[in-house]
Image (cartoon, rainbow, N blue to C red; front, side):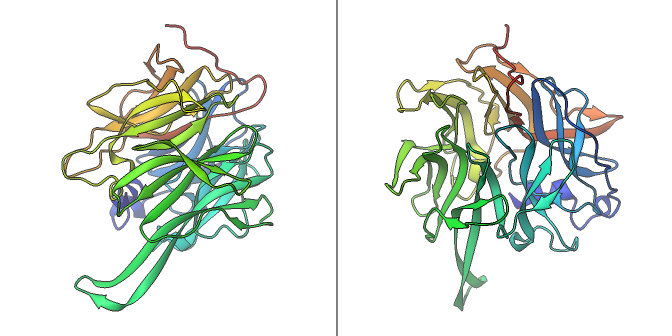
Length: 363
């Protein structure tokens, strides 16, 4: 979503030139907590922040303004380590000009209190990090472009695909988990708790569709979890999977617009039975959901509904819902303001670990 990226960073404009560094803060809250991407205006800043379960008192742990490095990649989600001590994210480094280029990305680790920010070696171009259940490895996505020698009517053409990789936290043991294919994007979203399966979003431009897929890590291949779906997330006990249902809007393409018209949130058993629609919001489009450590509630963001001309606006509200679809409630109002200036959140994820269970929402 390059338009969103430009808006987030204010590239090429006065707003970007006036960005200032946001100071790192101290440790996140005790008890149930969240991490999320946070964008604020005047001064403009793109940060990774933590808060309590009600989005109260956000604390910055990484990112900031134009001078902050690494600057969080606005198109990539976050991941907590299983013990809740580390946050993995895709960060961008180097000069401000061209900072959105894929080769500027690395996977970074930062401690929950904002300390120890470091890049994982061998993750150049990486985004979409996911921790393995033992906390020793990171799965991530990397896009490959291969330019074609001939010139087309629009200039040089290229083949493009996204593959999934795995690496140790120290950069050792780099492994490619999915094969490169032109027009195919594989992006990881969660491991099963026993570590035997990695849930993926599998997008195929030529088939014009996206499906959720379970990749067996013992080499026995993969299988489809749900058609026309994206972002499968296993519950903490592995019994359920939350995901986004996708529908076409007008003449738009699922794969060109990505999650632009992933509309509603669903859940099903890990064996693909008992599929349940959790939300039905014609005016909004849901973003990927995160399970709280108890497995009883989910948090996610919404954005405006897509049209034939656009994939939807920036994130509007942070929402939560019980895993059975009851007690839908809002954690943040649409486009909240701080001292009269816009602030919005994206990709909230629950902090795992004992004593951090949020539990069921009381209606």
